[in-house]
Image 1 (cartoon, rainbow, N blue to C red):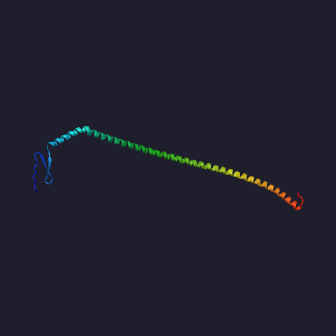
Image 2 (image 1 turned 180 degrees about the horizontal axis):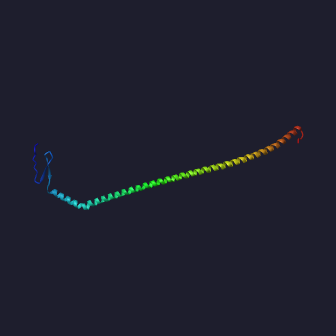
Length: 166
């Protein structure tokens, strides 16, 4: 493998590349050191002025978020408890309503039977009274018809005989 000689100006550092034999040129002089000092100074100035307050805000936001999540979990648990309580109460009310409905149905059935019984009794009484009235009228009509038939028979006999029959 051929070797290459690399020449670097004064103050430059050559770092050989891995296997290719080509060096990398890194300029390491005073400006680099000055930039590092300015960067370190900037970090020292910005840390209390910017980084710490921003990190504190992030930490507070995280605490508030966790607190809100915790509160939300508690509220959800309370809502679950209230929902179960509501469902139990609703079931109890439904059972009470079903019991009351059944009681009312029974009472209504008894009342209906009583009303029907009274109506039947009243109807039977009216029918009996009507039958008695009809029987009385039929007897009265028969009696009148009997008297009338006797009168007509006397008249016919008187006409046939030519004299009055007693």
